[in-house]
Length: 98
Length: 381
Image (cartoon, rainbow over all chains, first blue to last red):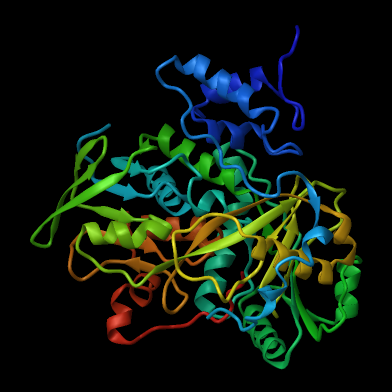
């Protein structure tokens, strides 16, 4: 039985998406959170479009995916050390929040 | 969507769903839950999953003891694995005030049966060998605290509630609450109206907006709280580590990622949910001070949610004076997720069986007018 891989980082197949959809995860964000697609190294850069296409095809043409998961920094996985020197003014306010 | 219900819960986060779950399991399912987004849209889908019993008041310690008991069995009850791992919480104190707080809290926690221990920095290194304890005075460690994965908690409670007859409507926004005199008549949404006399406001950061629809002013304010996750690595970190000097906390998830955040005293109240370089750089510095080897570790994603904060750091629970049947379960300020199983059960007992736990009078909205605020001093993040 051939498998269609949707997300290579997290090894999510189209069958996984189908099962998730049938269990009630019927919007892109819920599908992402339930199956884990788009939560690995590429953060959705290679899989989001496949998942969106899947969702559009099962939901029918007039219920297209209008609200994709938000793109968040960093653009690609980056070591903590690369950010440690950024925004040095950030430590100015030191007292605890009440 | 149903057009009438005995009880309408506004907010499909963990607080509202825990109430629905407990009500349904007690045999009461004439309940409609209204959620403006998908399940996990608000803070319930954006938090770090920390569950601790190390608090400074008897009320919160006992509440959290009960919550831990409930979380330990939730996976079996709801059919989703919530990945609850009791690796402990390790607090680090660097100054006199924090050290004294840990000492005092530990005494109270021990008296109430929570096995917290004050330990030396050297002992902390035996629990987390990668930890840099330079400048740390004393630590508090409770092995039975832990972390869980928030999403399956929300889905699991929703699934059981729904199987038992509760109607859960996602992508449904409340636009009005119709109040005649002191009585609620109906809740209006963008998908239709529901006749009801009882409404629970469990809307988290959106609670003040929901309350205003019924003519009630809440003192809660929303604050953005940022958090991040690293690439997954081999398990090396048992407890959640929290540095009291700047509110840093981080733990290792069951997927192997490091997940954490820190306090930001300069964060203004807002409904901003974007990401900042300020957070990323402050968190990087703080994490690298505590775990020097983390410098080479890669950040995968940062995101943000809201703390729904009250003036005294305690939630708002129970009745309001002006409107009958309008019940508040909000203002948890970043601690709602860990408290949810206990709060949902207590609220269900109260609503259904009229067994009123004292928390519904000590934490009601009226305390601010009465001048009876009780500050919980041990808030992190």
